[in-house]
Length: 141
Image (cartoon, rainbow, N blue to C red; front, side, top):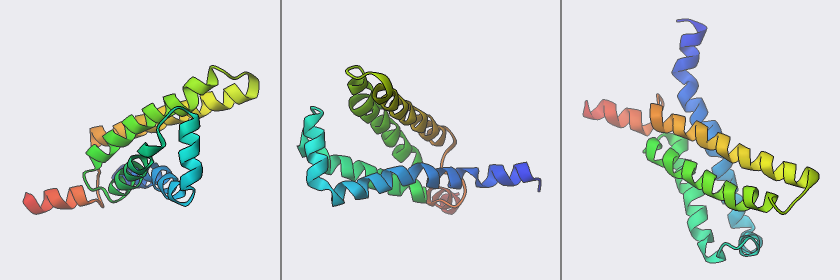
């Protein structure tokens, strides 16, 4: 088996791990800094009452993506979440900023867009090997 073939075999589970970690860590940090996160959301014009839903999306879909359980759905949800949160918390605020501060917000916005692109690759290609999705399809086949 060539190196490229091996890379193709394990790319999907490695990608799932790498893509999921930002959401799992972010959801966990929001629990630890709940009131501060809630205040920040309110400051940005988003109801702090949505924080439990945000945590559920980040942790729930992040963990599902990590283990490859309904990975396409989890990736789709996280892609949409990334685009919406990127627009609200990075793109829109950047319009009121100048210089380095605006540049950093735009970099963060494009980071969210890029993450969404990676997640949409999971939607297109599926969970790959070493996943609940793969194991479930093998059992039912």
